Image (cartoon, rainbow, N blue to C red; front, side, top):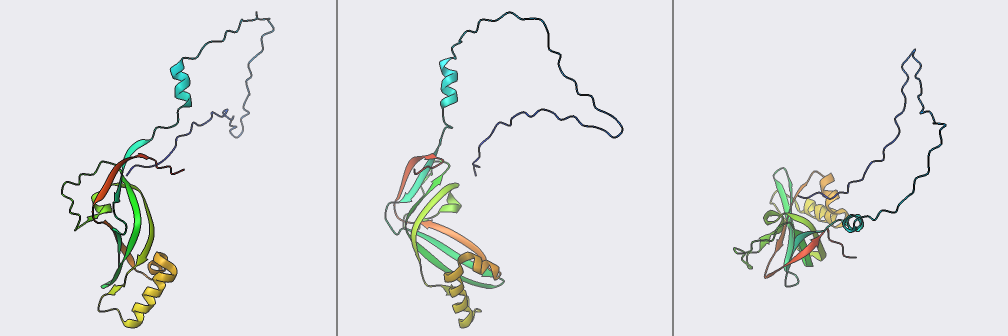
Length: 192
């Protein structure tokens, strides 16, 4: 995955003199010359156009590829929670969204009826999903009715953190179905 970052130039600070025990450090200063120097004529040199242009340019954006389903409600997140031998899972249908990926995707083997697991198939840089709603949860047989109600309420009230605090771990898959739209995009994405 590509990391975001910005380099900054460090300013040079004057070196500090260090004093060892029992020794006195001498501070040396440059002597000023008492001789008069002749005045130099200052000329305004023109900076080359390429140098001036380079200084004004913003960092270049890289190409990325935006993948999104062409139809609404063709995205799904599948949550599988596990603790020891117990599991419970549910899915959230997502109204719309997209992912930005590093390379142009090869969709020659893509089957719109089967779909694609986005994070398994692509190197995702960024994503945006909106408006989702949960389906009915399914629990393994070893989870009691009381525990099922408790876990579902915990999910609804506290989300992932509530279940993680209780010792559950999450496997999350995001699926796109149906015809996909692939278009070139600039990265980093700046919607403003």
